[in-house]
Structure formats: structure tokens, C-alpha cells
Length: 348
Image (cartoon, rainbow, N blue to C red; front, side, top):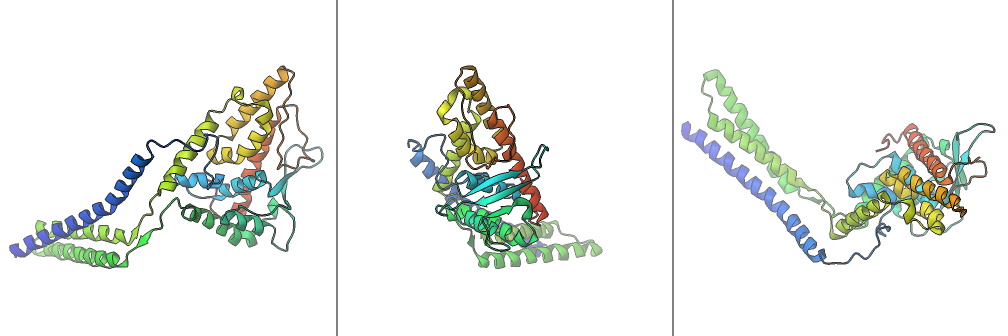
């Protein structure tokens, strides 16, 4: 009987060792590939300036590089980005004599829908396709009927990292799943049989340890049924560039901005600032620039090309801060409406 117990321990330990070696061999190629890419790229000169995101990326995709979950806030960032790029206009709706916006109208601009990613196309066309083709739609008009379109947009956003070549596709291996399942079952049977011996006061620690080894090996082997996708060289380059871009926005100061570039800077980088969560810093830098320019008798004009402000009463405060505040409310309202429509993913 002792010989059988020792045999169970030996087999269990051996199978666990094999599973550990297989797991290590799975990781090693990715680690070596990353090291080789790092060595090849160590001496390369950056081809993009710090204030430029990767051309294959859009603001809603930045969080994916840090493996952040996709949520309804990304819908708001995407709509803001589409507006900045001239595909739609956003009109705040206010009541006479009241401060604040109670709704938003999205106007489809007669602009060729070229250069759009799949999830952007789905969102842009879906907004103006229901209940019948139209060129304008209120934000609160989104309803449960729009949920499939919104869910599809977010699903395509998640898949965009693979489509642009940032991630490799996961590899499947059903054979390892079957082997792992069998080993796991044998381990559980061994442990159960050994514990059954408690009634006879003949519990064998060798069989318990052997069974535990089999269970651990089975779990490791089952884990090989789906190999996690790995970042490609393109994806790693995008991560670095987005990191440089975010650092540039974080370090943006009023004295670094040319007066003639102020309005363009707001229109080109606002959606990215919201994606990074540093939109208030961008507003502060531009507001400081506006105040300095006014004190120099060189007033600077800052306007949002995508914002239809015909019904918006602007205050005497610097306009950049007011535009960012409006955009902040717009993104928050998108999250609220999407949740109410049943998307159920919330902001991140």
C-alpha cells in the first residue's frame, strides 16, 4: 500500500513539473521577442512629435493600451472626437432665462465618412438611422431600441486593438483543455479516495500531496486552452507614443502656446484630453493664455468649430474654460443616457 502511495506522489509531482515547464515555455518566446524588439528599437529616433498621437489610434482607444475596461464614457469621447474631426456638430439646448443645458442636438454634417474606424462608422451611421434616416437627433432621444447599436460600437472598440495590429489574436488549443480536464479529475478522485480513508484511520500524506499536484497540473494545463494575446511591436510603439502624447498634454503651459495656435489646439486635442482625464489642465492653460493676451492688448480668439453655440450665452470668463465645461457636461450626459438606454457598462 505504501508503494502505491509513493507512486501517486511521484506521478503527481512529475505531472505538475511537466505542466510548470510547459507554462514557462509558453511565456519565454514572448519575453524573448519583447527583448529583441527593445534591442532593435533602442537606437531609433522618434518619427512623431510628442504632441501627435499614433496615426492608428483615436482617443477612445488610448485606454485600451493600458487595458482599461471599455464603457459608456468612451461613447461620449468618441462623439466628441467625431465632432472635432468635422463629422457632426453638437448643439446645447437651453431654456430662455435659464442657465445650464437640458439636452443636446447632434447634427450630421454633410462630410464624406472617410477615414473612420469600424466602431466610429457604426456609431455615426447608427445615430442617424433610427427611427428613420435624419440629419439631427437629440441626445436624450437615445432609447432602448439603440442599445444593440451602442453595444456593437463598444464591442468593435474592444476589437479595434487587434484590427490595427496592436495585439496578436488569442490562440486556441482544445487538446490541452481535454488533457488538463482529465488530470484535474484524476487529482480530485485521488484526494477524495485518500480522505475516504479517514474512516479507517489510514490517511496517506503521500496520496494527498500527489492528488494536490495533479489538481494543480490540471489547472495549469486547462489554462493553455486560450493563450492570452500579446502586444505586437506596433502596439508597443503605440503605447510609447501615447505615453509621450499624454506627457505633452500634462506638461502644457500657457507660455508654451502661440496665440495663433490656441483655438486649433483646443479643437484638435480636447477629445484626447478627456480620454486622459486632463481636460481641466488644458482649459486652465488656455484660460491663462487668454488672460495674458488680454493684458497685452492682444486678445486671442478661442472657438469650438464643432459646437453650435447660437443658443449659448457666454460669460465674461475665458472661453476655453467654458467650452471644456460644456464638453464635460456633454460627455457626462452621454454616459447617463447610455446607461438609461440599457447599455449598462457605465463610465470607467
